[in-house]
Amino acid sequence: MLDVYGRRDYAIIGELIAPGTRVLDLGCGEGELLAWLREHKNVDGRGVEIIAARVQKAIARGVSVYQGDLESALDDYPDGAFDYVVLSQTLQETRDPLRVLRGMLRVGKRGIVAFPNFGHWRVRLSHLWSGRAPKTELFPYDWYDSPNIHFLTVLDFEALAVREKWLVERRIFLSGQRELRAFPNLMAEVAVFLVARARETR
Amino acid sequence: MITHAATATFDRVALDCGTTLENVDIAYETYGELNSAKSNAILTLHAFSGDAHAAGEGGWWEKMIGPGKAFDTDRYFVICSNVLGGCRGSTGPGSINPKTGCPWGMRFPAVTIADMVRLQKMLIDSLGISRLLAVAGGSMGGMQALEWAVSYPDQVAAALPIAATARHSAQQIAFNEVGRQAIMADPDWNHGDYYSGRPPARGLAVARMIGHITYMSDESMRQKFGRRLRAPDQFEVESYLQYRGSRFVDRFDANSYIYITRAMDSFDLTERGALSSLFDGIKTRFLVISFTSDWLYPSYQSQEIVSALRSRNCDVAYCNLESHYGHDAFLVEAEEQTALIRGFLTSTHA
Image 1: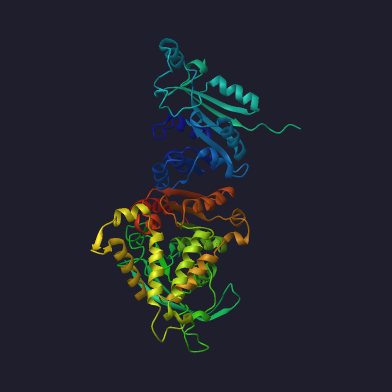
Image 2 (image 1 turned 180 degrees about the vertical axis):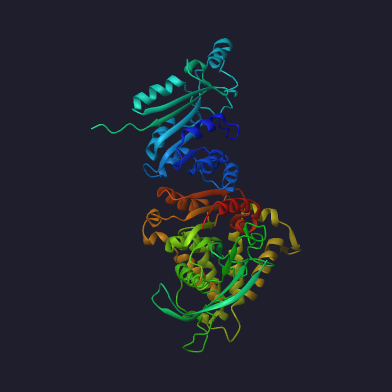
């Protein structure tokens, strides 16, 4: 099993990406995933990250990262510029998630989206028993200091994919380090989707 | 560090204004050693008032060029030349016009950033280097780096425009014009013919003082000077600016000030087409750096370059470094730039 800086979602994304491809990582942090992909998969990678200190570390690592807001950053890239556009654990923090997802599938042939599942049973129980905004290991913040502004579940993403006519090519569900098969909406802590634009119908 | 200083002379160089300049000198220095494949050469490009002396004691990028530094002379062969129109060993308005035997003065032809780069290209060719690993510079040096990438994309593996712009703004032109007018208002300027008499030292000093204000930020000036007094009737900041102005006069020619600032003001890559179209198909990698407190070359100008590069899917890294030093940051903030530049150069292959 791959280990990419201890990040299981990175390890899975690393496995999903074909060698020698062009990859854009949105919210790429210090460029760990891109550096790993370059080293192990000969990937031509680019990143977008808003926090200057992280951008500095990523560039110092030799990764081509652009310091800017990922939501507006997507607008500049031409159609189909990348084979994959990665959005890892950031979708729930975006102001306009649908615009981001559509943008990802405009500039990329495929999108890889990893997000924490708000449908997980612990989240449901926390809300049910406390009667307050849920707080779990996965969502550890108080409502007033959470970076998460759009909460979604596995089912929500599946429904959106149907509505937007995206092709879900792979879906991987994680509970801790373990991969799940059954009851993902209830049991998955993190979901990873590999989606492609639907072919134009004539 | 192996250091070499020399002057190359070329029979002629064609200028954008249509004239051809003959017997053109270009002063340059090199640091480190060119490898046998000639694949480790980096051209560093000086800002408005700089010269070929980039590294070693007193070099304008002393903190950045040398063994183990950002431009590591143990690995790279670093070149720096004085620009065309300058007064530090390269041909400029203070040089002798071979046809008349007198200094050119204001009869020197207008030069552009592209002309400066054309002469640099001739120098690089004469050194037997067909492809540079990188071109790098801040301010006007960054404008030259952009010009290199646009004019000779196949000869440049990487470009590092720092605190630069693709075109001078009204504000940048305005400050330059005040500097030029200060020189021209000095009676000693004499329409540029002062080489046999007194140079327009007062005008040039005032021009330099204005320049220094624009290179700093409100915060860096507050930290550096505040309201401290140097003498009962003189603020520290007044004394500093006067000192800078008077020192500048000893090493810089007023006519070069006029010619080089005009070259900067006329710089506008977009005259040749939309910026994005100029980057079409360019394989050159870019590292663009701006500084948060730089109000002379504001971050948005760097972002305009980066946005155009991204729209053509060029390989570009961009960082807006936090600094309170204003435009001077590109000379001062060595540590943070070093981490970026070292990582970027290590991952660049000729």
